[in-house]
Image (tube, rainbow, N blue to C red):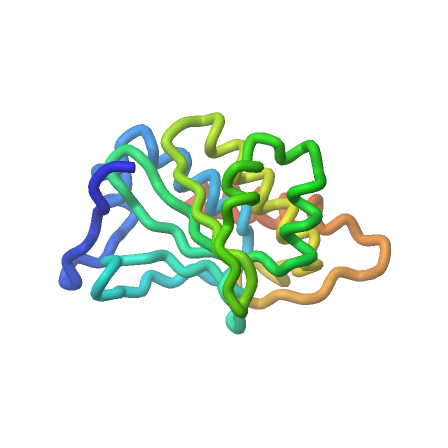
Length: 175
């Protein structure tokens, strides 16, 4: 990764600034946000890290997104059982080095995924979709970010999240 963007507390990131600063990587930013559908998104300033986008369900963070020159980084924590699932699932072979090297903390395993190209973006998008599905959190409404509910028995969480993300994305295009 290159230089971290938005380290000045007086300059809050906006889509226009992100598009300008990230360039081609802005599409990776948009893709990752689409995966998180109706989860709440809130920019927060950290003295040591600059501006971070916290994506959460109003109680716990799903992930933090950090903007860099020509890329983004997704930082998150997964629980023991979640990590075990991803380590043993061959669909996530591309992420094995990060999953194996993750540092263990009381809250779980800390992961950081740098996204500088389409392959990275696809791998992290699939990972986040699977994590959301595994946690069983379904956003209630794209109009009210941060409101989530537990998935109903037999409900395909991944499809529900993608449908909500698509409806939210279509709604943004109309405006």
